[in-house]
Image 1 (tube, rainbow, N blue to C red):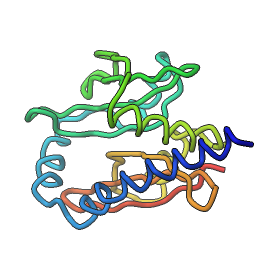
Image 2: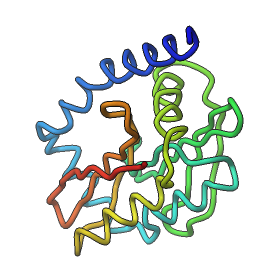
Image 3: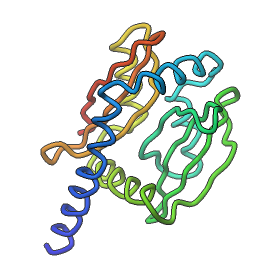
Image 4: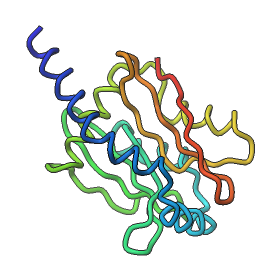
Length: 173
């Protein structure tokens, strides 16, 4: 009982800490969105395929395209047992380019919160992402982030079409 309470509290704190960042992104970080939309033109690999490629390193618990140091990067967080990793998938070939252990800081906090949501999921993050893309013709997924909402696991899937971004919620249970 005490473990469940502590875990629920940790997930809640992680969610509250992440919320201002998420809200800031939703308010239209136009410059970053424009940069990402432009960089995605070179990406041959879908987020869904990136999630699938990372499965050799563990269970995918989140994934996103981002521009890191001016370069497009497909990053997937995975968990294997109680260990977390960041898997970088080559956005042109779909092969794993690099895997690094996540051992601390904000990345570990985020990975723990995401794994809590995935632990309750009956639907894979990849399947939820595929469903979101299928329901939104012409869009492609750029991120899939799981969380718990009212005790239920959901994936917030951010989609892009040209320079138009939108986020949809997919149930994971």
